[in-house]
Length: 414
Image (cartoon, rainbow, N blue to C red):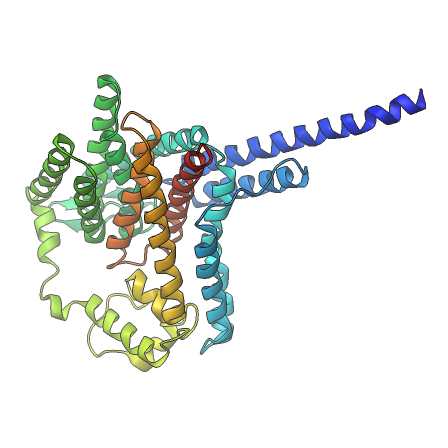
């Protein structure tokens, strides 16, 4: 009897490990969906989602039945993260850079969600939840431009041309603009994908609401990023699809210019050569020229600013208002090279995988969405630091992780 029991113990132990692996993966997937649900609404709640995914993965790996699944993006991500850490070691203010390193935890959203999203089914579910939640945020933002109130923070919003600058559920309109830029770009890519007429009509309604949200943010960087994504969509499509993308771009431009408050916002740029952002950029270049290889250290723009300041007025001096320049100041050419390596490999790999799928495959528009979001954020990030803005940066890495997870699934199918 004892011998029989001993013989069955390994099988029982194996069953428990398998159950632990399944529970861990289910928990990780639930965390990804929780993040998607609360990303447009609550920092604390979406952080809980990330933490849930991390706990689920640790449980799954501990079971011994789940393995780390590699992608071509692992090495570029590690090099970029490593460049940020290395910049702390060579920083002009190591104490400040070390404290700022805590803010770089945003980068961890990519590898965690890349492993938590195991297949396209989970990715579609999470992105679907994200679109529902973001539509609610867009509706609230549209109400804000008319009512001029932020109910969450009990404050009045900045007026402009008879309307008000919406912030959604966030504290700043630029943060909301970056967030809705991502969700709006996803909505556009889904509309251009193959779908039954009723579903396509629903997606068109979602896109219109997202466009209204982008307009309501009055964030010119979001407007520029979205138009760049539309132009890229036109290049990716053929025939009538290309004309549809161009028509959408024309609709967005005409629609924006038809609103007096938008025209006022565009005119507020004034003399481009005397724009505060230009002085921030010039100051950033000055800092980088003195620390070209590894930068002046993570987060040191604020401490270096007084020493390299270009004379003139400034609205904000917290960061360079440019993702590329921010990386160059922080980590120099080393950081910029790693950053470029990540995106070059991303576009080459995802583009190649996307090209192998037929138009009718439901994963194709999701891969397109990831590519267009990358373009939108990279272009919009030329006028704003989206990647270090937590609410925006976490959604960027979540979207890239979902895209890479789908590409990995297609690759594994051969």
